[in-house]
Image (cartoon, rainbow, N blue to C red; front, side, top):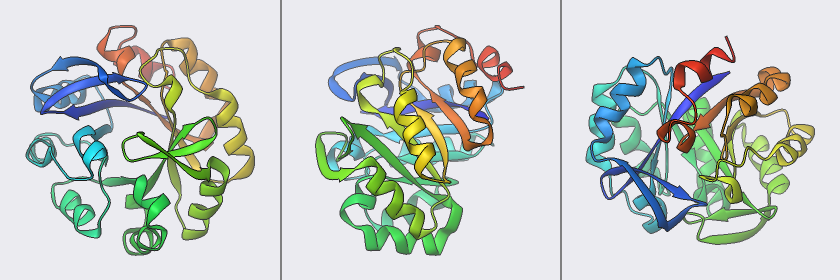
Length: 239
């Protein structure tokens, strides 16, 4: 199971939001490239990048920083946030991004999303961002009419192999992951899941171990940046 540090980009800085709210932001660094290099040096095997400006506006706003991170580190990068056209997917891949996370596009442009899965295979993931059982879109500002299990069923038909599951109510809160929601998804799909949102302790990570290979990885943000746990200690849980 991979432990994947998160680098959320907002106005050129590395930040964490509370429940996705841009008005409740903590800035953890003004040089995201250096932060990416630090996580790599500490042993990270993958990094999770989010273009928050892109998620809020639908336009890529941190392209230059993302490109520089892609040029600077040697571990795989996965990117989400505002990727809503085929051109934006191709551009991200040209920056050295290994894995693209589709969110809003998967809900609002399913045909385009399925075509990208057919074209790029396992380089395309889907982000399932849940709020009260419904899938949120457009930087979590809106809730769709689609429930989580409907989206899971749909994307599995496209050939998607892996999803990033986030309970928005827990993101940035250090309240622990949504185990109930996770169990529900696992019971209804063969997809592998990357768990995101709420991780606060080594105990949270230990509680994920029994799920075995069904959990591909866990994304950690605030707990690392606020020194609730260290990356080496978190990785050691799964070694």
